[in-house]
Length: 350
Ligand SMILES: Cc1ncc(COP(=O)(O)O)c(C=O)c1O
Image 1 (spheres, rainbow, N blue to C red):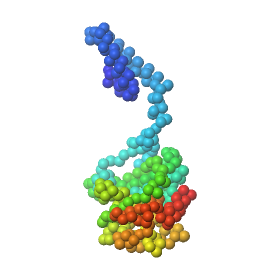
Image 2 (cartoon, rainbow, N blue to C red):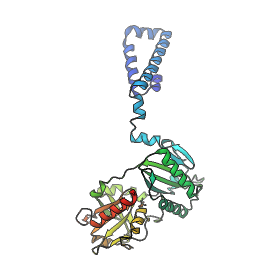
Image 3 (cartoon, helix red, strand yellow):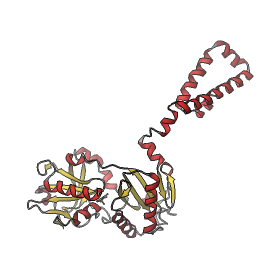
Image 4 (tube, rainbow, N blue to C red):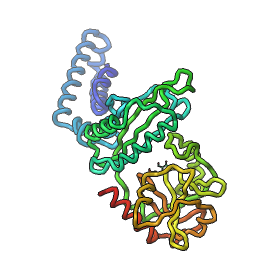
């Protein structure tokens, strides 16, 4: 009976009923009747059941019962209330799923893109869609939705979820592969999570540690972040915030951001090849007031950097204060970095 009642109610109800039942059970006369009279047992069961219903209704009407579930939503509850899109279906986020035969799970095969919304408006959506379609075609993933349809879904999701400041991720997977290896019809997943840009991180800056590695198919935004995640304990052990990849002495990028440096002649340099062409990087290159050179940047070059910073959709512009234990500039955001940061924020926030 207790099991039945506890499945009926929540934890508060369960505790309350446990106390009542224990109290009654310790009463000798009742104990006797329960032990000896089967009909009485059924009667008690009915009484407890009715009490359970009444307590639940009471809590629902006057107590915290309702408030806890609807008004004071915790972040994970907000997430569970929001929608995602799986192919063309809107699905509650905590119920959204794909099958394990998908190539993304079997072999880590898929692409994605990620952009922000500010005040319910997508930021640089066209640029992100350009890159998304480029990534999909490079990976031979045949889109079953065209650009206009994807845009419509994105706007519908924004309207439905109403998460004003967020990050939206569009993922295209290798699909349900029969042999776990061959490409199949891709699955499209569009998810949205709350995201607010933290302005405090700009002044804190970051420490980087260089690492020799070249991402596979670097111009494609694949779902493969294998080395980046694998290196997390190493980064921690070096007291750094992230790695800066180089390949045969040429700097490329960080696992989730592009790299820029300012040299002694106040020239702004950024690696030109073997990188993912970031949308934030693209915006910086487009500023007519700035003269940014896309070029080869070597391990030797970064040793003489006056300023350095990384860029991405979530970080905007983040100053680098240290690389491989060597301080860059005076450990504060440099003049050029600060200017570029302001320009990027203004461009994004309108
Ligand atoms: C490998 C890599 N490079 C650069 C970037 C920065 O690109 P964006 O400015 O479009 O966020 C990212 C973003 O996640 C990335 O994964």
